[in-house]
Amino acid sequence: MDAQIKDIRLEYTDQGTGTPIVLLHAFPLNRTMWAPQLDSFSASFRTIAVNLRGHGGSSLSQASYTLEDLATDVKDFLDHLTIQQAVFVGLSMGGYILMAFYRLYPERVKGLILADTRAQADTPEGRAGRFEMIRTAETQGASAIADIMIPRLLSAHTIKTNPELVGEVRAMIIHNPVDTIVADLRAMVERPDSVSLLATIARPTLILVGELDQGTPPADARLMAERIPKAHLTVLPDAAHLSNLEKPEVFNQSVLSFLESINSN
Ligand code: MLT
Image (cartoon, rainbow, N blue to C red; front, side, top):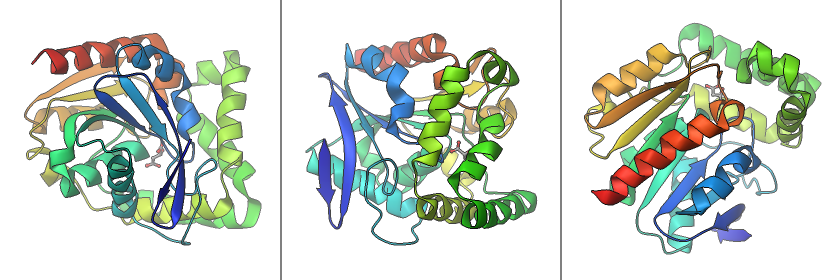
């Protein structure tokens, strides 16, 4: 399905009925990363997975944007669907967008699931790495970005034993235009530190992290869990950064228990 949001066309999937759950994907992927979650969540909840602007088949209206722009796209998208409040799942960049969304539109948030993400801004080394990746994308294209990202997204064990999943992740990356990859990197490098936001998050929050996640490790998840007043942390064994794809059963079970606890309160 498509939603026209100002000058942007966003592709999305909307499955099931009940409390709306909005899934925000990671960099540099698209909504199909939520395939193992859609059927599971939509049995009990209205589950919506959106391609952020420029990703998958969603259009890219400008060469650059901020994470706040992406958060406002999501707010406009909720308006389009006439959804007043939702529970959000944001993984990695999706989590950065969810924090920006909470800063701007807290009344639209019923609960948060922050997966494999962090509140801190980039370190100087992290910023330098992003500029290097921008140069690589511009000179060598999306396939070179896939080569760099796959070992960061998936565990060594997954890469060795699950070529099908590796192929799916690669396909998501290379189907994104280079302009989108570059714009995401610029948006992430400019994102503000959200550590001071954490104490103001007044909604139930589940924090998930793969125990093998290198980019946003369990220490970053613990920091969020310590500062967000109503937070619960679950560390997922044997998963790296894309914990929802590497360990879908335990990821889904953790989210579903959390959603049930929100609904019963
Ligand atoms: C992601 O998975 O969205 C990225 O790894 C986030 C990042 O590069 O900070």
